[in-house]
Length: 119
Length: 149
Image 1 (cartoon, rainbow over the protein chains, first blue to last red):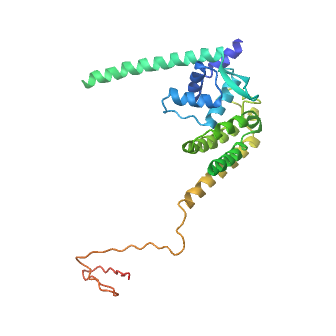
Image 2 (image 1 turned 180 degrees about the vertical axis):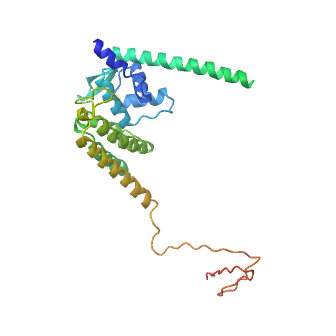
Image 3 (image 1 turned 30 degrees about the vertical axis):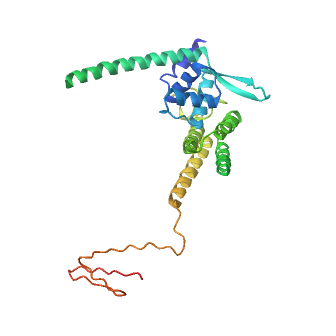
């Protein structure tokens, strides 16, 4: 388990696409199209995720254990594959958000100093 | 509707270019997702998928054997990226680049036969235009203006 955790540590920092996918899955379990729509919504249309990038990232996230998949039966008998955030994925997402928060704090401080100089 | 089915057919061919393990796992979902796409989303879908296919061949699909570590130093002899894996990626890259170049070269389509572009330069202050004749301007530079009846 420790080995796997260490492997997941190497996933950080996450790419923009992976971060958006994990954020979308933090809301609820989703299928591919649902993830695309959720990413579009949460980024207010600024980040457009194509199917190639989506499934390449899902492939990687599934292999590293950050995302899990389940098959769900629909009413018409068809099955749909849904993706979910695993506990490891949640932990990695929290670490990534914490890292981004630190970056934002540094940026805010330095930009504040620039504003003071300009004033 | 017909355009949509043509685009889907082309997309199906593109998806067939993915490594077998990846294709087996994700192709049905990708095609399902493409079928729901709007007309304005197709350029993104084609561009994104072209790049993703090449990247997938170069990096390998995680659906089967995963690479030891992402971005890790791998000794050349133990490298999982063999020439056999690189070659299809190279061929695909060349095919896509050649395809895009050809489309770019051919678009917009050439003018149909019989259509000619006539550019007529008219400078009423200097040129003397007579019907059916050519006029010469006497300021050193000669301009020949053909008049169209």
